[in-house]
Length: 104
Image 1 (cartoon, helix red, strand yellow):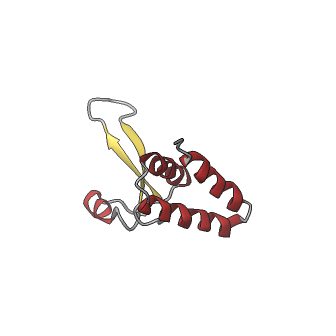
Image 2: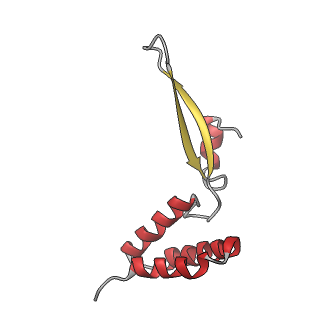
């Protein structure tokens, strides 16, 4: 039997997307439920891609937040700082916030 994982997620997204913010929350809740109840790896990957694109945590559905940090390269004389952005969940990644010292 053919796998319709992509079509299922696209249908949910297209149907509720026009409802604005409320529709987006409903899409997120439906996909969150599907992700945690299905055994279909293809569907899980499609849902995970949607969560990453929309910047939501797949474990708790909280909105991911950007945390900027910089690495200093002592081997370089000029332009020795390299800036990065990590998208972390304020709920699930709390240990990383404390360990690495991320602050808002």
